[in-house]
Length: 118
Image 1: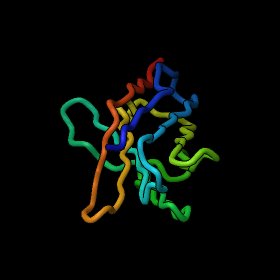
Image 2: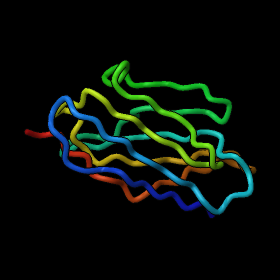
Image 3: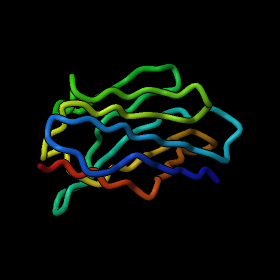
Image 4: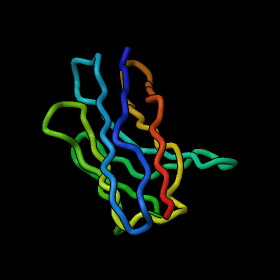
């Protein structure tokens, strides 16, 4: 079973930056897709960005040009650099590790709170 742990959330002023980290442990292989989702109060969980094992990235339109997703040098680690943060970025951010092993598996972290406020 793959375990996913996020870290790096906090309170930041509008225009500021934060870096989120995610580590997926318990596998002997490279996770196929690692992704960040977020969920704001009263809203559905939405995809923020994702990165494949080959480095292909995809971003939500709302974060393009401000957020950067990357894989770490340690296998199955991932980062989300968030710049020019806006109040509407406030949400709980979740890391997801997706991989194929007979069937598609999707494992979630517990989430980390990001609050953008002055």
